[in-house]
Length: 360
Image (cartoon, rainbow, N blue to C red; front, side, top):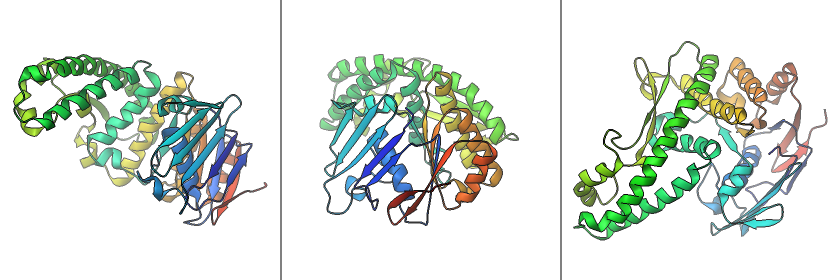
């Protein structure tokens, strides 16, 4: 979905925002606290149903207001999100209400590239698993269906484990069967996608970190040599003691290895940022190869990337057909990159929550 029109109401300090004739690259500049990142936050809210800055709606809904609204339009689609302070949400596509955020996410694939964050590398398996599952959702048609059934079985199994201490194996038999069936499906799907992703990843890695060898290794979250069903039986007593399910795809990981050790222990902070860029750019490339274009949110691009890295990133995103929303304190550097690369863009000045088009 190429966004041509964007409306934002009651998000943080933003005054009513109405942007039209948006371009492949859209650059928002202004002082810290002006509301630049809040524009990206609103687009993220529309596509995913959540903010990337907080999990609490009242923190991004304007003070004393009960909701926030974000609306976007393309040549063929109109999508809207109303987020209530209670956490509930109303979603519309082309005027019709829809039930799930997943339907909206399919229409608007979204990637946030934040050069300041190294959470994907430094903060355990969960953010890496989420990164993999974002790709799974957009390129594997049956993934979401299998994940829903697996998640339902996992929730029920964990609920039983919490409710009683001395569960017999037969008490969990129905959920074990469902968990292992869909868990094995998820594992095979992930394994196949990681193999494909590895090819795209190595291509972008050569551009951003040409002197470093890094390999992705997928860990299933259970012992694949004998299967998940066997793990659930073998570790039944331990699960009862812990009161949660230890093994399964919900414990999977995407490990990033160098010849001298794990990436989180070996790479510098700057190298980690470039690695994160390579991971996300390669995902965007994989979608692009499937004729799916990604909207990219690029926050504070000039803050911690040098001039060469900035230009490489912008050029690559343009090659991949992405529509990009950029925030920066240094719009002149970004404009120079865009001009040198002959990329169409629109410039916006953000000041005290007010967004104005800059006529060029």
